Amino acid sequence: MSVATIGIAFIVALGVLLIGVPVAVVMAGMGVVGGIATVGWPMIESLGSVIWGVQNENILTAIPLFILLGEILLRSGLADKMYMALSAWLGRLPGGLLHSNMGSCALFAATCGSSVATAATIGTVALPALREHGYDMRHALGSLAAGGTLGILIPPSVALLVYGSITNNSIGQLFVAGILPGVLLTLLFMIYIVATNLGRRTSPGSKQPMELRDRIVLSRFLVPPFLIFTIVMGSIYFGVATPTESAAVGVIVAIGFAIVFGQFSLSLLHHCFRQTAALTGMIILIICGSFILNVTLNFLSIPQVLTKFVTGLGVSPTEIVLILVVFYLILGCFLEVLSMQVTTIPIAYPIVTALGIDPIWFGIFVVLMSEIALITPPVGMNLYVVQGIRPDNGSINDVIQGIWPYVVIMLAFTILLWFVPEIVLWLPRSMF
Image 1 (cartoon, rainbow, N blue to C red):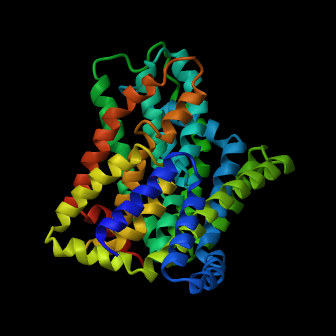
Image 2: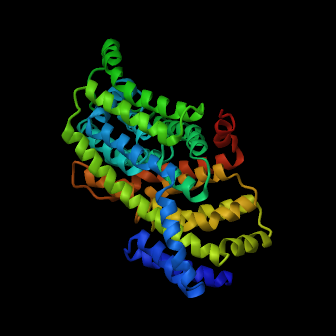
Image 3: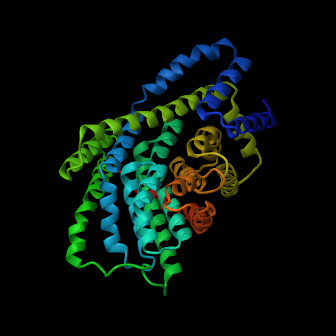
Protein backbone atom coordinates (compact mmCIF):
# COMPACT_ATOMS: atom_id res chain seq x y z
CA MET A 1 0.00 0.00 0.00
CA SER A 2 1.45 3.39 -0.98
CA VAL A 3 1.87 6.37 1.31
CA ALA A 4 -0.61 8.29 -0.85
CA THR A 5 -3.27 5.59 -0.35
CA ILE A 6 -2.68 5.65 3.40
CA GLY A 7 -3.02 9.43 3.42
CA ILE A 8 -6.30 9.30 1.49
CA ALA A 9 -7.72 6.68 3.87
CA PHE A 10 -6.73 8.82 6.87
CA ILE A 11 -8.36 11.93 5.39
CA VAL A 12 -11.56 9.98 4.67
CA ALA A 13 -11.62 8.76 8.27
CA LEU A 14 -11.23 12.29 9.58
CA GLY A 15 -14.03 13.44 7.33
CA VAL A 16 -16.33 10.79 8.78
CA LEU A 17 -15.39 11.91 12.29
CA LEU A 18 -16.14 15.53 11.45
CA ILE A 19 -19.71 14.76 10.41
CA GLY A 20 -20.42 13.46 13.89
CA VAL A 21 -20.01 9.69 13.70
CA PRO A 22 -18.72 8.38 17.08
CA VAL A 23 -14.99 7.82 17.05
CA ALA A 24 -15.28 4.24 18.36
CA VAL A 25 -17.55 3.34 15.42
CA VAL A 26 -15.16 4.95 12.91
CA MET A 27 -12.10 3.19 14.33
CA ALA A 28 -13.76 -0.24 14.50
CA GLY A 29 -15.45 0.21 11.11
CA MET A 30 -12.20 1.16 9.38
CA GLY A 31 -10.46 -1.79 11.01
CA VAL A 32 -13.10 -4.34 10.05
CA VAL A 33 -13.76 -3.11 6.51
CA GLY A 34 -10.10 -2.57 5.74
CA GLY A 35 -9.15 -5.91 7.25
CA ILE A 36 -11.78 -7.88 5.31
CA ALA A 37 -10.88 -6.12 2.07
CA THR A 38 -7.19 -6.91 2.36
CA VAL A 39 -6.88 -9.96 4.62
CA GLY A 40 -10.27 -11.65 4.47
CA TRP A 41 -11.82 -13.98 7.05
CA PRO A 42 -8.70 -14.22 9.31
CA MET A 43 -9.38 -10.61 10.26
CA ILE A 44 -12.83 -11.52 11.65
CA GLU A 45 -11.40 -14.52 13.47
CA SER A 46 -8.83 -12.34 15.23
CA LEU A 47 -11.33 -9.75 16.53
CA GLY A 48 -12.58 -11.85 19.43
CA SER A 49 -9.14 -12.32 20.91
CA VAL A 50 -8.30 -8.64 20.36
CA ILE A 51 -11.39 -7.36 22.17
CA TRP A 52 -11.01 -9.97 24.93
CA GLY A 53 -7.38 -8.94 25.39
CA VAL A 54 -8.28 -5.25 25.69
CA GLN A 55 -11.06 -5.93 28.20
CA ASN A 56 -8.73 -8.05 30.33
CA GLU A 57 -5.89 -5.52 30.41
CA ASN A 58 -5.27 -5.02 34.11
CA ILE A 59 -3.92 -1.49 33.77
CA LEU A 60 -7.21 -0.27 32.27
CA THR A 61 -8.88 -1.00 35.61
CA ALA A 62 -7.25 2.22 36.79
CA ILE A 63 -9.46 4.29 34.45
CA PRO A 64 -12.79 3.79 36.30
CA LEU A 65 -11.02 4.09 39.67
CA PHE A 66 -9.48 7.46 38.85
CA ILE A 67 -12.75 8.70 37.36
CA LEU A 68 -14.57 7.57 40.52
CA LEU A 69 -11.98 9.37 42.66
CA GLY A 70 -12.66 12.65 40.87
CA GLU A 71 -16.43 12.14 41.03
CA ILE A 72 -16.36 11.65 44.81
CA LEU A 73 -14.35 14.83 45.35
CA LEU A 74 -16.67 16.73 43.01
CA ARG A 75 -20.01 15.51 44.37
CA SER A 76 -18.97 15.71 48.03
CA GLY A 77 -18.34 19.46 47.78
CA LEU A 78 -14.66 19.20 48.70
CA ALA A 79 -13.72 21.06 45.51
CA ASP A 80 -15.77 24.09 46.63
CA LYS A 81 -13.99 24.21 49.97
CA MET A 82 -10.61 23.78 48.28
CA TYR A 83 -11.27 26.83 46.09
CA MET A 84 -12.29 28.90 49.11
CA ALA A 85 -9.10 27.95 50.97
CA LEU A 86 -6.84 28.77 48.01
CA SER A 87 -8.61 32.10 47.50
CA ALA A 88 -7.74 33.03 51.08
CA TRP A 89 -4.03 32.58 50.35
CA LEU A 90 -3.70 33.60 46.70
CA GLY A 91 -6.33 36.36 46.50
CA ARG A 92 -3.84 39.11 47.43
CA LEU A 93 -1.46 38.41 44.52
CA PRO A 94 -1.66 40.61 41.41
CA GLY A 95 -4.53 39.01 39.55
CA GLY A 96 -6.32 37.93 42.72
CA LEU A 97 -8.83 35.16 42.17
CA LEU A 98 -7.34 34.29 38.78
CA HIS A 99 -4.54 32.62 40.75
CA SER A 100 -7.16 30.74 42.74
CA ASN A 101 -8.52 29.46 39.43
CA MET A 102 -5.12 28.11 38.41
CA GLY A 103 -4.24 26.71 41.83
CA SER A 104 -7.61 25.00 42.21
CA CYS A 105 -7.44 23.54 38.69
CA ALA A 106 -3.96 22.14 39.39
CA LEU A 107 -5.00 20.63 42.73
CA PHE A 108 -8.23 19.16 41.39
CA ALA A 109 -6.35 17.82 38.36
CA ALA A 110 -4.04 15.99 40.78
CA THR A 111 -6.99 13.90 41.93
CA CYS A 112 -9.30 13.88 38.90
CA GLY A 113 -7.55 13.04 35.62
CA SER A 114 -10.08 14.80 33.37
CA SER A 115 -9.74 18.28 31.87
CA VAL A 116 -13.44 18.73 31.17
CA ALA A 117 -14.35 17.76 34.75
CA THR A 118 -11.65 20.11 36.11
CA ALA A 119 -12.87 23.08 34.07
CA ALA A 120 -16.53 22.40 34.88
CA THR A 121 -15.97 21.89 38.62
CA ILE A 122 -13.69 24.84 39.29
CA GLY A 123 -15.61 27.06 36.88
CA THR A 124 -18.92 26.37 38.65
CA VAL A 125 -17.35 27.37 41.97
CA ALA A 126 -15.30 30.31 40.73
CA LEU A 127 -17.43 32.21 38.22
CA PRO A 128 -20.03 33.63 40.68
CA ALA A 129 -17.22 35.01 42.87
CA LEU A 130 -15.31 36.39 39.87
CA ARG A 131 -18.42 38.15 38.60
CA GLU A 132 -19.26 39.50 42.06
CA HIS A 133 -15.80 41.04 42.40
CA GLY A 134 -15.92 42.64 38.97
CA TYR A 135 -13.30 40.65 37.08
CA ASP A 136 -13.06 41.03 33.33
CA MET A 137 -14.90 38.01 31.95
CA ARG A 138 -12.41 37.41 29.15
CA HIS A 139 -9.54 37.01 31.61
CA ALA A 140 -11.65 34.99 34.05
CA LEU A 141 -13.05 32.59 31.45
CA GLY A 142 -9.70 32.21 29.71
CA SER A 143 -7.93 31.29 32.95
CA LEU A 144 -10.57 28.66 33.75
CA ALA A 145 -10.49 27.09 30.28
CA ALA A 146 -6.68 27.00 30.27
CA GLY A 147 -6.43 25.85 33.88
CA GLY A 148 -8.84 23.03 33.13
CA THR A 149 -6.42 21.60 30.57
CA LEU A 150 -4.06 20.71 33.44
CA GLY A 151 -6.46 17.84 34.20
CA ILE A 152 -4.86 15.61 31.56
CA LEU A 153 -1.24 16.59 32.27
CA ILE A 154 -0.94 16.53 36.05
CA PRO A 155 -1.25 12.88 37.12
CA PRO A 156 -3.34 10.84 37.47
CA SER A 157 -4.36 11.41 33.86
CA VAL A 158 -6.84 9.42 31.80
CA ALA A 159 -5.11 10.66 28.63
CA LEU A 160 -1.78 9.21 29.80
CA LEU A 161 -3.52 5.95 30.69
CA VAL A 162 -4.88 5.72 27.14
CA TYR A 163 -1.48 6.56 25.64
CA GLY A 164 0.22 3.93 27.80
CA SER A 165 -2.33 1.26 26.89
CA ILE A 166 -1.99 1.96 23.15
CA THR A 167 1.82 2.07 23.14
CA ASN A 168 2.47 -0.46 25.92
CA ASN A 169 4.54 1.99 27.97
CA SER A 170 4.76 2.11 31.76
CA ILE A 171 1.77 4.01 33.20
CA GLY A 172 3.75 4.70 36.36
CA GLN A 173 6.58 6.34 34.42
CA LEU A 174 4.12 8.37 32.35
CA PHE A 175 2.34 9.60 35.49
CA VAL A 176 5.59 10.58 37.18
CA ALA A 177 6.80 12.26 33.97
CA GLY A 178 3.78 14.57 34.05
CA ILE A 179 4.47 16.00 37.52
CA LEU A 180 7.21 18.55 36.77
CA PRO A 181 5.73 19.73 33.44
CA GLY A 182 2.33 20.12 35.14
CA VAL A 183 3.75 22.16 38.03
CA LEU A 184 5.91 24.31 35.75
CA LEU A 185 3.06 25.00 33.33
CA THR A 186 0.84 26.04 36.25
CA LEU A 187 3.57 28.43 37.46
CA LEU A 188 3.98 29.87 33.96
CA PHE A 189 0.23 30.54 33.80
CA MET A 190 0.41 32.30 37.18
CA ILE A 191 3.48 34.32 36.17
CA TYR A 192 1.56 35.53 33.12
CA ILE A 193 -1.35 36.56 35.36
CA VAL A 194 1.00 38.47 37.67
CA ALA A 195 2.74 40.18 34.72
CA THR A 196 -0.53 41.34 33.18
CA ASN A 197 -1.96 42.59 36.48
CA LEU A 198 0.98 44.47 38.00
CA GLY A 199 -0.10 47.94 39.04
CA ARG A 200 -3.77 46.99 39.14
CA ARG A 201 -5.88 46.38 42.19
CA THR A 202 -5.36 42.85 43.45
CA SER A 203 -8.97 41.89 43.06
CA PRO A 204 -11.66 44.33 41.90
CA GLY A 205 -14.28 44.90 44.51
CA SER A 206 -12.65 42.51 46.99
CA LYS A 207 -13.34 42.55 50.68
CA GLN A 208 -10.83 43.26 53.46
CA PRO A 209 -7.89 40.81 53.59
CA MET A 210 -8.59 37.74 55.71
CA GLU A 211 -6.84 37.33 59.03
CA LEU A 212 -3.94 34.86 59.16
CA ARG A 213 -5.72 32.72 61.73
CA ASP A 214 -8.76 32.38 59.48
CA ARG A 215 -6.60 31.44 56.51
CA ILE A 216 -4.89 28.74 58.53
CA VAL A 217 -8.26 27.34 59.61
CA LEU A 218 -9.44 27.23 55.99
CA SER A 219 -6.26 25.41 54.99
CA ARG A 220 -7.68 22.18 56.39
CA PHE A 221 -9.68 21.90 53.16
CA LEU A 222 -6.41 21.66 51.21
CA VAL A 223 -5.46 18.49 53.05
CA PRO A 224 -7.66 16.08 51.00
CA PRO A 225 -6.23 16.83 47.51
CA PHE A 226 -2.65 17.11 48.79
CA LEU A 227 -2.87 13.89 50.75
CA ILE A 228 -4.59 11.93 47.97
CA PHE A 229 -2.00 13.11 45.42
CA THR A 230 0.85 12.21 47.79
CA ILE A 231 -0.54 8.74 48.45
CA VAL A 232 -1.31 7.98 44.80
CA MET A 233 1.89 9.31 43.23
CA GLY A 234 4.15 8.42 46.17
CA SER A 235 3.09 4.77 46.07
CA ILE A 236 3.70 4.66 42.29
CA TYR A 237 7.05 6.51 42.45
CA PHE A 238 8.51 4.33 45.21
CA GLY A 239 7.21 1.13 43.64
CA VAL A 240 4.88 0.32 46.55
CA ALA A 241 1.77 -0.02 44.36
CA THR A 242 0.72 -0.23 40.75
CA PRO A 243 -1.35 2.62 39.25
CA THR A 244 -4.50 0.50 39.67
CA GLU A 245 -3.73 -0.27 43.33
CA SER A 246 -2.87 3.36 44.08
CA ALA A 247 -6.13 4.49 42.42
CA ALA A 248 -8.09 2.08 44.65
CA VAL A 249 -6.37 3.47 47.76
CA GLY A 250 -7.13 7.01 46.55
CA VAL A 251 -10.84 6.17 46.24
CA ILE A 252 -10.91 4.80 49.80
CA VAL A 253 -9.17 7.92 51.14
CA ALA A 254 -11.58 10.19 49.22
CA ILE A 255 -14.57 8.35 50.69
CA GLY A 256 -12.99 8.77 54.12
CA PHE A 257 -12.68 12.53 53.64
CA ALA A 258 -16.29 12.74 52.41
CA ILE A 259 -17.37 10.99 55.62
CA VAL A 260 -15.19 13.22 57.84
CA PHE A 261 -16.59 16.41 56.28
CA GLY A 262 -20.15 15.10 56.61
CA GLN A 263 -20.87 14.94 52.88
CA PHE A 264 -21.08 11.17 52.37
CA SER A 265 -24.34 9.40 51.52
CA LEU A 266 -25.48 6.33 49.61
CA SER A 267 -27.18 8.53 47.02
CA LEU A 268 -23.89 10.37 46.44
CA LEU A 269 -22.09 7.06 45.96
CA HIS A 270 -24.82 5.82 43.61
CA HIS A 271 -24.54 8.94 41.45
CA CYS A 272 -20.73 8.67 41.36
CA PHE A 273 -20.94 5.02 40.29
CA ARG A 274 -23.38 5.82 37.48
CA GLN A 275 -21.23 8.66 36.12
CA THR A 276 -18.11 6.54 36.37
CA ALA A 277 -19.75 3.66 34.48
CA ALA A 278 -20.92 5.96 31.68
CA LEU A 279 -17.54 7.63 31.19
CA THR A 280 -15.62 4.36 31.48
CA GLY A 281 -17.85 2.67 28.91
CA MET A 282 -17.21 5.45 26.41
CA ILE A 283 -13.43 5.34 26.92
CA ILE A 284 -13.18 1.53 26.74
CA LEU A 285 -15.24 1.44 23.53
CA ILE A 286 -12.86 3.95 21.96
CA ILE A 287 -9.84 1.93 23.07
CA CYS A 288 -11.38 -1.28 21.65
CA GLY A 289 -12.03 0.47 18.33
CA SER A 290 -8.44 1.68 18.29
CA PHE A 291 -7.05 -1.81 18.85
CA ILE A 292 -9.27 -3.26 16.11
CA LEU A 293 -7.90 -0.65 13.71
CA ASN A 294 -4.36 -1.43 14.88
CA VAL A 295 -4.81 -5.08 13.85
CA THR A 296 -5.57 -4.02 10.29
CA LEU A 297 -2.72 -1.50 10.28
CA ASN A 298 -0.29 -4.20 11.36
CA PHE A 299 -1.67 -6.72 8.84
CA LEU A 300 -0.95 -4.15 6.12
CA SER A 301 2.42 -3.13 7.66
CA ILE A 302 1.28 0.50 7.47
CA PRO A 303 3.31 1.70 10.51
CA GLN A 304 6.41 0.07 9.04
CA VAL A 305 5.77 1.59 5.59
CA LEU A 306 5.31 5.08 7.00
CA THR A 307 8.32 4.73 9.30
CA LYS A 308 10.52 3.68 6.38
CA PHE A 309 9.13 6.51 4.25
CA VAL A 310 9.75 9.23 6.87
CA THR A 311 13.19 8.00 7.88
CA GLY A 312 14.08 7.77 4.20
CA LEU A 313 13.38 11.49 3.81
CA GLY A 314 16.32 12.23 6.09
CA VAL A 315 14.36 14.52 8.41
CA SER A 316 15.82 15.19 11.85
CA PRO A 317 13.95 14.54 15.11
CA THR A 318 13.59 18.30 15.59
CA GLU A 319 11.97 18.67 12.17
CA ILE A 320 9.54 15.81 12.77
CA VAL A 321 8.52 17.31 16.13
CA LEU A 322 7.85 20.68 14.49
CA ILE A 323 5.81 18.95 11.78
CA LEU A 324 3.81 17.12 14.46
CA VAL A 325 3.20 20.39 16.35
CA VAL A 326 1.66 21.95 13.24
CA PHE A 327 -0.26 18.74 12.48
CA TYR A 328 -1.73 18.50 15.99
CA LEU A 329 -2.59 22.21 16.05
CA ILE A 330 -4.64 21.81 12.87
CA LEU A 331 -6.18 18.51 13.97
CA GLY A 332 -7.01 19.92 17.40
CA CYS A 333 -9.27 22.51 15.81
CA PHE A 334 -11.63 19.72 14.75
CA LEU A 335 -11.18 16.70 17.06
CA GLU A 336 -11.34 16.18 20.82
CA VAL A 337 -8.60 14.55 22.89
CA LEU A 338 -9.44 10.83 22.68
CA SER A 339 -10.18 11.06 18.95
CA MET A 340 -6.80 12.70 18.36
CA GLN A 341 -4.99 10.09 20.41
CA VAL A 342 -6.50 6.95 18.92
CA THR A 343 -6.26 8.18 15.33
CA THR A 344 -2.68 9.46 15.45
CA ILE A 345 -0.67 7.55 18.05
CA PRO A 346 -0.64 4.17 16.23
CA ILE A 347 0.82 5.95 13.17
CA ALA A 348 3.08 8.56 14.79
CA TYR A 349 4.52 6.42 17.59
CA PRO A 350 6.59 4.02 15.42
CA ILE A 351 7.96 6.98 13.44
CA VAL A 352 9.14 9.02 16.43
CA THR A 353 10.63 6.03 18.23
CA ALA A 354 12.50 5.04 15.03
CA LEU A 355 14.01 8.53 15.05
CA GLY A 356 15.21 8.04 18.62
CA ILE A 357 12.63 10.17 20.45
CA ASP A 358 11.98 8.89 23.96
CA PRO A 359 8.48 7.28 24.16
CA ILE A 360 7.82 8.73 27.64
CA TRP A 361 8.72 12.22 26.41
CA PHE A 362 6.49 11.72 23.37
CA GLY A 363 3.59 10.78 25.67
CA ILE A 364 3.86 14.13 27.48
CA PHE A 365 4.19 15.88 24.11
CA VAL A 366 0.96 14.29 22.84
CA VAL A 367 -0.85 15.30 26.04
CA LEU A 368 0.40 18.90 25.70
CA MET A 369 -0.87 18.99 22.12
CA SER A 370 -4.17 17.55 23.35
CA GLU A 371 -4.32 20.30 25.99
CA ILE A 372 -4.06 22.93 23.27
CA ALA A 373 -6.78 21.13 21.32
CA LEU A 374 -9.07 21.49 24.34
CA ILE A 375 -8.98 25.30 24.09
CA THR A 376 -8.74 25.93 20.35
CA PRO A 377 -11.89 26.71 18.36
CA PRO A 378 -14.08 25.52 16.81
CA VAL A 379 -14.20 22.20 18.72
CA GLY A 380 -12.25 22.99 21.93
CA MET A 381 -14.29 21.18 24.59
CA ASN A 382 -13.17 23.41 27.47
CA LEU A 383 -14.37 26.50 25.61
CA TYR A 384 -17.94 25.18 25.54
CA VAL A 385 -17.79 23.81 29.08
CA VAL A 386 -16.74 27.18 30.52
CA GLN A 387 -19.19 29.06 28.30
CA GLY A 388 -21.99 26.73 29.39
CA ILE A 389 -21.52 27.39 33.12
CA ARG A 390 -20.95 31.15 33.02
CA PRO A 391 -23.58 33.07 35.02
CA ASP A 392 -24.38 35.62 32.28
CA ASN A 393 -25.40 35.35 28.64
CA GLY A 394 -22.21 36.68 27.09
CA SER A 395 -20.71 35.55 23.79
CA ILE A 396 -18.34 32.59 23.51
CA ASN A 397 -15.95 35.07 21.87
CA ASP A 398 -15.07 36.20 25.41
CA VAL A 399 -13.73 32.72 26.17
CA ILE A 400 -11.91 32.46 22.83
CA GLN A 401 -10.22 35.84 23.26
CA GLY A 402 -9.19 34.94 26.79
CA ILE A 403 -7.41 31.68 25.94
CA TRP A 404 -4.93 32.81 23.25
CA PRO A 405 -2.17 33.96 25.65
CA TYR A 406 -2.31 30.54 27.31
CA VAL A 407 -2.06 28.78 23.93
CA VAL A 408 1.13 30.75 23.22
CA ILE A 409 2.50 29.80 26.65
CA MET A 410 1.77 26.11 26.00
CA LEU A 411 3.50 26.20 22.62
CA ALA A 412 6.55 27.94 24.10
CA PHE A 413 6.58 25.39 26.92
CA THR A 414 6.48 22.52 24.39
CA ILE A 415 9.55 23.96 22.65
CA LEU A 416 11.26 24.26 26.06
CA LEU A 417 10.58 20.58 26.76
CA TRP A 418 12.21 19.63 23.46
CA PHE A 419 15.44 21.48 24.29
CA VAL A 420 15.36 20.50 27.98
CA PRO A 421 13.89 16.97 27.93
CA GLU A 422 15.09 16.29 31.49
CA ILE A 423 12.08 18.30 32.71
CA VAL A 424 10.05 15.28 31.59
CA LEU A 425 12.54 12.44 32.01
CA TRP A 426 14.36 13.20 35.27
CA LEU A 427 11.71 11.87 37.66
CA PRO A 428 10.90 8.70 35.67
CA ARG A 429 14.60 7.85 35.49
CA SER A 430 14.94 8.21 39.24
CA MET A 431 12.04 5.89 40.06
CA PHE A 432 12.73 2.94 42.35
